[in-house]
Image 1 (tube, rainbow, N blue to C red):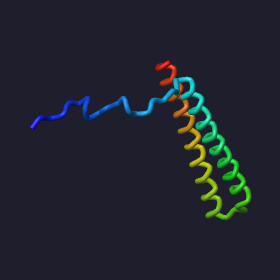
Image 2 (image 1 turned 90 degrees about the horizontal axis):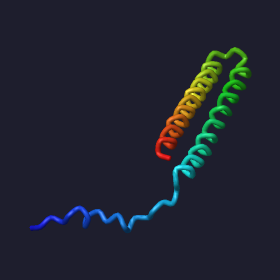
Image 3 (image 1 turned 60 degrees about the vertical axis):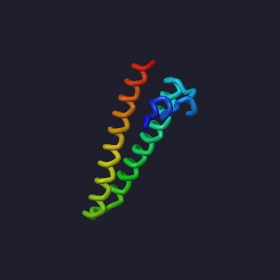
Length: 93
């Protein structure tokens, strides 16, 4: 029995083609990462407000501190992702 060749199995001509170039991709990534960074900053503010209004309750202050830490870690990851994407887009363009 004969095996079909690669061109018969994977017919790439029928796949949809994207018209996005690296500049469009960079704009989309910038918008998405900007929204993500905005959410992280908002979470830091909410965590700070929860910390202030905890009135010394150890459980509430621990929860508020954890939310601030997670938001800052998310912000750092977002900034690292932006740096990596910017580096890759500049290399492709």
